[in-house]
Length: 86
Image (cartoon, rainbow, N blue to C red; front, top):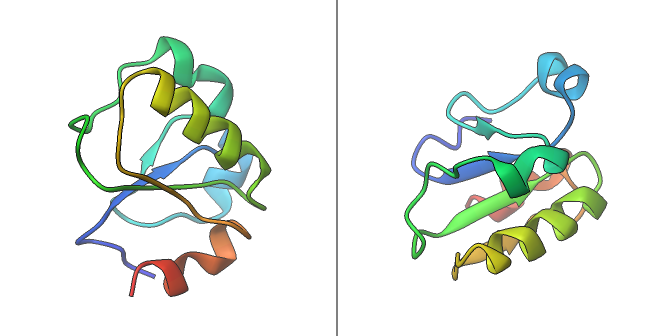
């Protein structure tokens, strides 16, 4: 998986991240999102994923609260990213 032309936010924990991730994905564990600066513009299309889709759905709510408007929750998690990034 490359995802090089997409904005991808990986909200998995550090151990999951180390086991594999997209080359250009930004890693911010979902528990840190509220207090971290998000390195995307508020109107950018952002694909958010975790391992299964649960934490990413929480992350989408946090991003919306922070003013982001174009967010896609990758349901099913990391293994489903290729289908979303086509």
